[in-house]
Image (cartoon, rainbow, N blue to C red; front, top):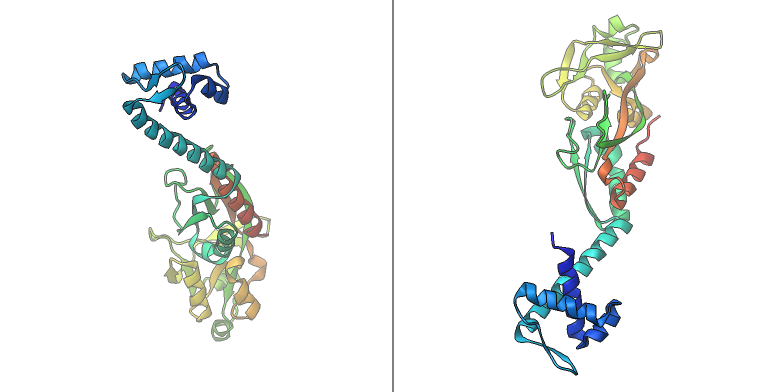
Length: 302
C-alpha cells in the first residue's frame, strides 16, 4: 500500500511544478505556501534529490525533478482513471459476472433471461456454467447461482431467495399407454417400464407420491433405463420407452401438444424447491443486483 503522505507529496510537487510557484500551488490545493514548501522539502529529503531550483521570482525543475515530474503525472492520471472505473462500477453494470445454473433448467428457463440481461447490459461479460453438481459458490468464485434442491442450512456468506417449488407428475407417451395400458395404482405403475434419473455416483432418485394425508411418500423404482439428463428422460419417454416422473416446468410444451400425458394425476405432488443464491459480499454490485432482479422475476414457479 502507498502511504497517503507520499501521495500528498506528489500532488503538491506536480502542482508546484505546473504553477512555478509555491504560493499559486497552495491556492490551487487550498494550502498555505509554507505548507507546500515544507511538503516539497520532505519529499526532497525522502528522495535524496533536489527537485527545484529556487529563485525569488520562480521555481524551475532540476534535471532529476523533470524526470520525477513525468512519472508523477502518470501516477496521478492512473489514480484519476482508477477512481473513474470504481465510480462506474458503483453506478452501472460493468465487468465479468459468473453464474451457475442446473443443466436442463438453466438451458430452458435461465438462458433466455441471461441473454436478455446481456443485451440490456452490454458492458457486462457473463460467464455461465451449466452443472447439476453442488458447486461451492464462494470457493469457485460464483456470483449468482440457481439451486434446485433442499438445503439444511444456508452459510452466512450466501444470500438466498425462494422462487417456488416445482410440481412433479408421472407421464408417458400416448403410444406407450396404448400398448401397455394406463396404470391405475402405484403398484401397477411399478410393473411398467420406468425411466429414472441417475446421478454420477450410480444412484437413482426415488419417485415421490402424495400419501393421502398431505405428505409425500418416496418409492424406489425398478428402472428400464437410467439417464443422467432430465432432457434425455423426456426424449426417451416421448419415444415410448416407458414412464417417467418429471417436473412440469420441463415438459410444459410436450403436455400442451399432447406428446406426453399425465398418469395417476391424484398422486402428483410437490418436488424440490427452487432458490436463487448469491454471495452477500457482491449483492450491492450493480451487475449482480440487476441480474438478481431479472432472475427473480423470470424464474419464479408456482
